[in-house]
Image (cartoon, rainbow, N blue to C red; front, side):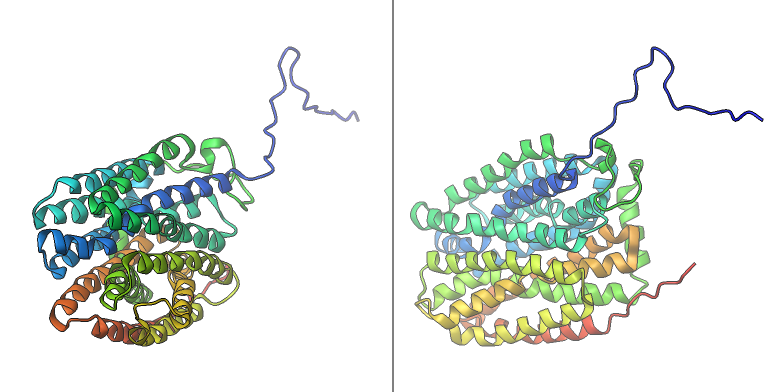
Amino acid sequence: MVDVIQTTEPPVGTAPAPRRRTPRIHRAWFVAAVTFVTIIGAAAFRSLPSLLIDPLHDDFGWSRGTIGLAVSVNLALYGLTAPFAAALMDRFGIRRVVAVALIVIALGSGLTVWMNSAWQLLLCWGLLVGLGSGSMALAFAATVTNRWFTERRGLVTGILTAASASGQLVFLPLLAWIVDNYKWRPAAVTVALAALVVVPFVWLLLRDHPADVGLKPYGAKEFVAKPPPVTGAARRTMTVLFKAARTGPFWLLAGSFAICGASTNGLIQTHFVPAAHDHGMPITAAASLLAVIGVFDIVGTIASGWFTDRFDARRLLAVYYALRGVSLLFLPILLAPNVHPPMIFFIVFYGLDWVATVPPTLALCREHYGDDSAIVFGWVLASHQVGAAVVAFAGGVARDVFGSYDVIWYASGALCAAAALMALVIRRRETVSA
């Protein structure tokens, strides 16, 4: 009996197939870095609304409620656009959607320089910037994380979420200085230019899927083929919404995240600077405090991502919301003309908790909704921004009616307690062994 030995030698005259060297640092981390820088650039515009309330009121005589309405439209569209943007990324790719979004942001911010009526503020800052920013929302970070990572997802989510705070940190003191010394129009131009600068980086460096460069997702055991483009983005987005809306966890996540938006973007980011200015604090000092929130937000969000990989996401959310609510109850007595130690403690504490809720919320979406988690999270984010929009408008109205923001601080603190309870009653998804 003769054994036939089969060799794997290539035929004579055929060059052996080149072996792809495994890079020391996985490409996924470079994609995450580009995403981080992109969100930083896009976050510049989010630093500006709180600085414009008093200047626009002084220049045009518009009520704070009217200005707050434009900010609320911006915040609402920021959230409502996010789930459709996630579906559009599945259809046209991440790179195209993000590049177009940045251009729309630059257009909306730049056109505000020539506005002279309140409806133009609603159109430029509310509609255009809202639509563009919605495509740059956290659904963008969720899509990148889901495609490029199977391990360290909580950590990466925390890092990308912190990018928004980093943008606030970089631009808020600068924009406050520009508004204080050169009025608000040069600040709007600065925001437009910041968005445009990021576009070449997105187009040249960002990639849609690991398969585009012949790699497995970070931590994956097997190669994952790039899925074909998904048509019917709007239809798919609504289908996912209707499917998720029939489950209890969706409403609990959406409700608690709406309160998250109300107590951060709608309340502190929009009204902290004018509220501190009401108590005699200079605008630049108040803006610097808000920027410090961004510093500690980076630390808190990355730490929250690390915790989310190791602890029960529901309990993390309950702790975050409860502590946030307690801190808001003390804010009215802390506002003063000067920056004092208790105020610094509040800023540090609030910064650590600012968007620490995002990694556990996204983890729960992923746990309950699997492949549709990015779109579901987009809808949960929409509720976040609707909550922010309501409080952005209500805060301006409360200031016009009562002469202070105290009612809004106390109401938001009570809502945070409700969000903590909502997080605790979310049921864990039971896994069935095959």
